[in-house]
Image (cartoon, rainbow, N blue to C red; front, side, top):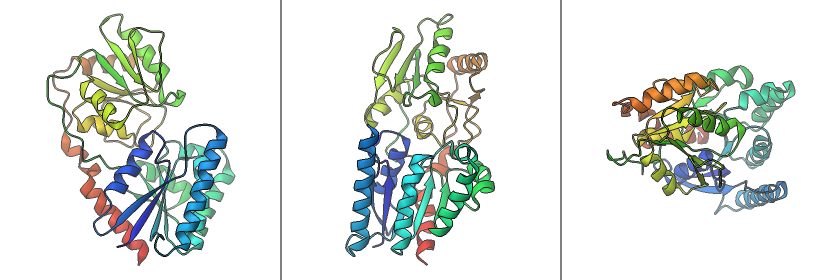
Length: 328
């Protein structure tokens, strides 16, 4: 049975790790899959050691016929994430193993455009390593095709364990923010938004991941959560807000919708169904108007058929086609 090896930050909290886990636990029919972690949270030295360990592990796997993968599937963001993955692509190609560069970053195009040599270097790297590039949506394909050439589109998969939450268990005052504590994710804006809304609706509060403490009594710090804890938060919130400056394809939005939780997105996020409500990035008045409308709406259920493109059976078939094409 052919084997695919997923390499990336599978032990680092975040959407990319969740995608890797789902793909590894549910490979296409007739395939098996393994995970190799190339990143850890912590100091630069800890990250370097994790990268070195992954390199050594891959070297040994490529030399051992019993462990050797048939496909190396690389999961990457921009910047240093790519510089680490490019080395794995080179190693796989040198050993005669096809490789996939799966771009998850919502700022990959910005990162490339920031320095013109990055564009030519990336093109050269994927050409030399004969990498197959996969992006998360047709909108990302359009953005990146002018920079890096041909790409394939395969969406992120929804966890099949997700189910719609039963009615009546949600807290009508709970606004949820699930992301790391990073300016790009808009945590400070989320707090400012809820603070202003509380002037009219003082019972509202913000449940917020990525922080352990808060000076505000109406902010509930959630820190980092397990998948089970995250689903509890999604199933009890009245709405999930994602005010990010950019995203690749935020899994938490898809997970919320699959559980029947309304979502309000920043209009900078273009890799999700257009039917999801959006507000203008960092426009406080527009966010207040849209959020109040959703909170007061009696019918906020999302059309489940719009999630079919993210269903695991459909994506398993897409990955099977992709993998088998590389082995021809």
